[in-house]
Image (cartoon, rainbow, N blue to C red):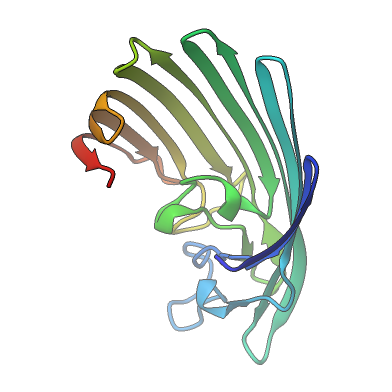
Length: 227
């Protein structure tokens, strides 16, 4: 993702590729040969702007951030523009061999910035209604994690995340309205400073806007040698 960032102390200001995504057509609301504008018609004429501040107090470190971005579509005969916003807060606490981490985020028309919030790795930010107006979609997400340094050579890590893009009473198809959960557990062995082995179990669960639910599990192993 293209980005231009300025940092001074704990503050950073950035302008970046907005990555806007529109939902697919409203299900059943229009004939098949007269579809509403969707993600193929999305465009943007200005970058997304973000502001971030991070600091630490002893064993506790934190970060807060906000983002504003333009949502726009243009079919040649129809067009509309809205603004999307997001807010994020994260923290980590180090207590000897244990580190606790957490993040919470909320957005209105900026769901592309919620990690794994829908199809194509991010959820829809807005949809176009039958009057040709952009309607923003809201989303929330969060994650918690724990790392435990069992010994100088072994570390155990666990995390759980959740994301929900809310439709309210709207029936929008495709990548909108998806709830995603994932849980990871891994063990890392570092026999020396150049060599690392790891094994990880992941569990994934998703619920689509029509109520369908799916889940899956994955086991991965890795080896890394640093020259």
